[in-house]
Image (cartoon, rainbow, N blue to C red; front, side, top):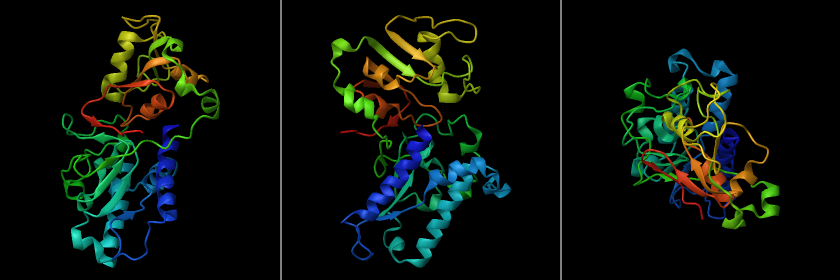
Length: 289
């Protein structure tokens, strides 16, 4: 699901800009320049079209995507006069994938980055993803530089593009009163190697989901054990549910935990009137109004 949300957010923003009455084709009139590099489209195709990841990119789709951004930079810096006027400070780039702008080429870091995950790197100064193809630690310094993943002084965190569930709208689940929310805390998602179909890497979710499940897991793990502090009004499960939105709307608090990078569960929670509980390290999140 989240993969589709990332693809959709990129295209939705691009199409809205194309249709905007504030758009101008005269660069001298423009306040900002949006650069439409569709990174999520490229990244998703890198998995099923391996020829896109070349040996010179270390076969990392993060490195491969960086090179596409750099080629876009080369094009606009050489063909247009606007970049050099401000060293790119009035240009906007969207990095919609899990790691956000962590793998942005050093040449464009002066610009504004739009991301779903405001990872400031304050605690973890290296890549925290458990998925090898998105890891950016091995990208050469002369390509990436040494910038953080997110700079709150210039960058923005955008919410995921989530199409509302028709049933949830019709039932007005977001308006369900507290008296009908019988679950104190709810989280549904991959809980790591201790569970069936769990991600095998110990570093997945920086270990946060695994710790939550070890304490409050409401579904037996591979050893048949529940969480140490499991209680009836707390749900922490890996089992996918066709009643996902109903279960969110039956809860007071809902967990927002990282997976490989950002998590779209903040938007899921708020759309169903559940208070998001953010368990992440030094992250900036979107303000959803």
